[in-house]
Length: 245
Ligand SMILES: O=C(CO)COP(=O)(O)O
Image 1 (cartoon, rainbow, N blue to C red):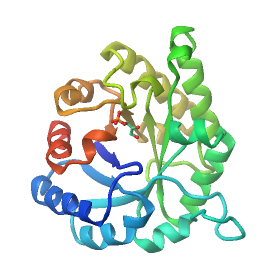
Image 2 (cartoon, rainbow, N blue to C red; image 1 turned 30 degrees about the vertical axis):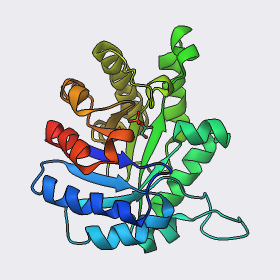
Image 3 (cartoon, rainbow, N blue to C red; image 1 turned 135 degrees about the vertical axis):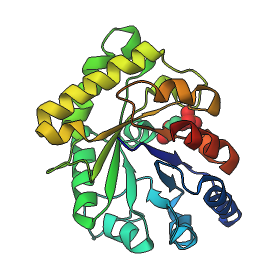
Image 4 (cartoon, rainbow, N blue to C red; image 1 turned 45 degrees about the vertical axis):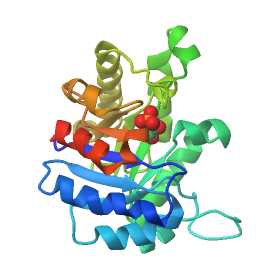
């Protein structure tokens, strides 16, 4: 399966950061994987113009469940699409925790994204306390089941397993733990989507760096990565991409 490597810039980046996309284009031409950069909303249109005609796609970090209406400050999937985005990250733990996004809201956002022509990267992941309690698999399985859009398919949906305790901490689960969770998520995808569930890409996210990327990509059901901090500098991100390719 062709790997998908997505960079989540989170709330980082001003216009000057677009240089990183220019550098990334040069460093990753011909890479045998799909590459997505998800800058903040304010940079999407410019980033998409810059990436036009290249192998890099642009994504957003959230969208609303509705296409339009009285939702001050929110942004719809259609708006993102018009600005040039092709992907959207949904249900990131930083949003689930702070904005109380439930699985049902994530599923509705993913359905809205799909209707607008965007592919979703749906995040799931347990907290440290949930892992210590031995319920990590139950948590991520429930999140995945509840967060899938109507008519999920490999063309419009990818999943990112991001253990909350591994995000931005430098901590990474063991290879066996990643393997166990990804296999379990694959099972759920097959139960929910049948044959199509085998083709949905499952990314790993949480402290991915060039030094650990290769061993993570060797896990059979790891089909890519969702990278935070190490996606901000083109040279770091390109090393992760080359480990995948
Ligand atoms: O949250 C993440 C990507 O969405 C992971 O962030 P880090 O790679 O900085 O740990």
